Image (cartoon, rainbow, N blue to C red; front, side):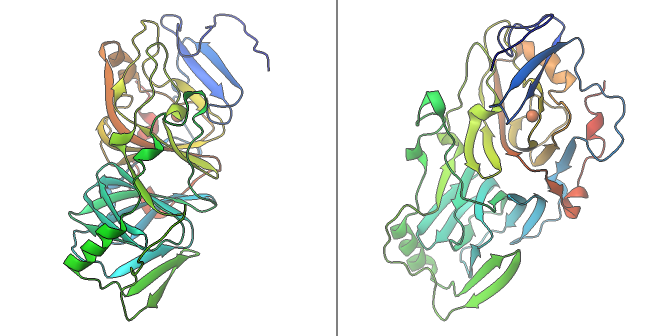
Length: 367
Ligand SMILES: [Fe+2]
């Protein structure tokens, strides 16, 4: 496909933007399809009013009523459901949970502990992804009250992202994926007892209880390439270019059918004088974008705190807040931790989640 250009334009996206002007990317298929960069004298986020259902959303999960032990659904479509999940401190497990609706990717926002599975014991702490494949029974034993974002893939397993020209060890080495430890499970059962005699199965979002007379974590050995694992943000090595801002897809962590999961981590900012340092204004034409603010200082937005979630549906351009643009010349690195979920089919917002919406978020780009 050839490129065509007119008027004031750049020869490299996100770099050499004429002084005082703004670049807006209009791209298909996330950051992989046909794309153009428009140079404008003012950002397209300068709307003066929005009427109708399409708008940027911000939600504060800190204000969700805490319901320990259960999943609170926030948003969903046919491919994905996103939940918030609280688990209280405990030393023993009584129930095993088996998700027959899909894969469960937990991201530990707060807390630490262990997960009992039929394959062995997994350990987690703040910043851990815990990938539990479909129908694998598991029980949380938290060493402190813990909070998770749960990303449920309902139409297929999570896969490694395609790392293209940077090779298979880029961003994270698959050696950093930690498998369950069966010996550690046996040691845990010896120390704390083995009394998990109930399996709770979720199928079609309804729960069924299976009762047993003995502990269900009774595996004495296993082999195969289907098993749960963890991955911690400390084992991820963000890709950077000193010369040009890389797109969010460079931070791709897992892909599934109909969506991708990316992790934004602290990293040095671009050093070329003419390189854009904030996320570029863009119309991500095909995806609804969900961003979970986990920790640190969220430099591209104003008035955000950890535990908030933004949803930027497809259909309008978005980008950094005006104050962030003004602050960037002096910044040398980011210290934000965030999980992004880009979703192909439109997301529906659940009623309980809507109750914690920051209603005037759409006005936050206005001066
Ligand atoms: Fe975006």
